[in-house]
Amino acid sequence: MSSAKVFSLEGKGLKLDIAADAEPHIKALRDNSAIEEVRLGGNTLGVEACEALAQVLKTKKSLQIANLADIFTSRLLFEIPPSLSSLLTAFLALPSLHTIDLSDNAFGLNTQAPLVAFLSSHVPLTHLILNNNGLGPRAGVLVGDALTKLAGKKEEARRKGDSVPDLETVICGRNRLENGSMSAWAKVYAAHRGVKIVKMVQNGIRQDGISYLLREGLRHAKDLKVLDLQDNTFTIMGSKTLSEVVAGWPGLRELGVGDCLLSARGGMVVAEALGKGTNKALEVLRLQYNDIDAKALTAFKNAAKDALPALKRIELNGNKFDEEDPSIEALRELLDERKNKAGSEDDDVEDLWGLDSLSDLEEDSDEEDEEDEDEDKADGASEDEEEKEEKAEKLLQDADKAEDENVPLDDDKNVDDLAEKLGKTGL
Image (cartoon, rainbow, N blue to C red; front, side, top):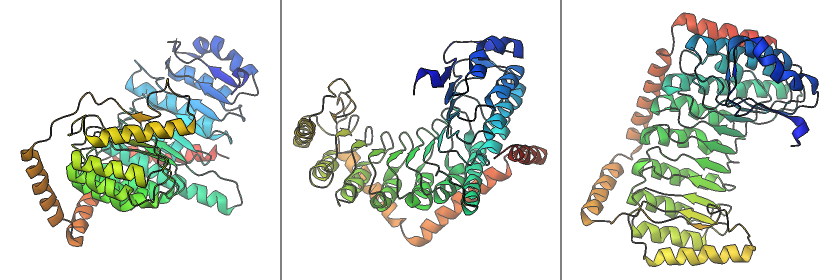
C-alpha cells in the first residue's frame, strides 16, 4: 500500500488527552480522502482525543485497515469504554473496513462492552486480531457470542443481496480463554465456516476444551489454511481429536501445535493421521516441546516423505530423541532437497525451510515410556461415547456457569443498548 494511502502515528509514544492535543496530528488524516489504512498503535489516547479522531475517521469511506494496538497504556479503567466506543462507532459507518487490530489493550469484563457491540454488528469484518487483551474465560464467552451473532448478520445481509465477505482470520492469543469459553468459540467456527486462519496460542485451554473446540467447531472450517494452537494442552485426548479432524482440512498449509504436551503416543497418532495423504498442501509443521519420542519421530519422517509433498519446515526442538537419530538426518536431507528443487533463495529466513535448532532435546527414558503407556490405557478406557458425552456436557456446564457469572444484569443491558446504538449507525 502506498504511503499516500496510509495515515500513521504508530510508535510515536504520544499522549493525547483532549481534542486540542490530537488536532495537530490528525490534520493530515482530515485532508486525505484516499486513506485506506490507519495506524494508531503505540500511543495513549484519552476520551476527548478519541472523540476527535472518530469524527474524522467516520468520513473515510475508503478505509480498509485499522491498527489500534496498544492505544490505552496508562489510561484509567473508566476512560477505556467511552474512548473505544467512539472509535468503533465511527468504524461501523465504513463499508470497506475489513481488518482491525486491537491487540495489547485491556478488554476484561469491565471494558469489553464496546468491543462486543462492534463485533456483533460490523458485517464487513474479514480479519480480526485480538492478542493479549486480558479477556479471561468470561469476557471470552462474550466475544465468542458476539462473533456468532455476526455470522447471523452476515447471512441476513447476503439474503438481501449484499456482497458480504466471510470472516477469514481470527487471531486471539494470550487471552486466558481457558476451557470455560470453548463452547462459545466452537460456535464461532461452526458459524463462520469460511474461516481460513485461526491462531489461538497461549490461552490456557486444556485437553477437554481443545477436543471440544476441534470436534464441535474447527472441523467445520473446511477451507482452513493456518491453525496455530501452540502453548495450550492437548495430551493424548486432544491429539486423538486432532487426528480425527485434520483430514477435513485439505488446504491446510501450517499447523502449529508446539508446546502442547501431545505426549509420545499423541505424537504418533498425529503423525499417522498426517501420513494418510489427505494434507498434501501442508508446508509448515510446528511440534516443539511435546514429549515426542524416537518412534513418533520416525512416523513424522515417513509422513513427510510419503504423504506431505509440500512440507518445507518442521520444528522439533525440545522433544525426547537424540539429535543423531537417523530420522533427523533423513528429514534434513529431504527438506534440503525440496528447497534446492524449488530454487528457493530464502537463505536468510531461517523459519521458512528445513529443521529448527535442536539445542534443547531431552533424553527419553523407560520410566517415561511406561508412564505414556499407562496414560494411553487410561485415556483409551475413557474414549467410549458415553464418557465423551459426559465430558462435553461438563464443558457446556462450565461454559454456562462462566456466562451466568459474566456481568451484572445492568451491565448486560448496557451492552444491549450500546449494540442497538451502534447498529443504528451501521450500513
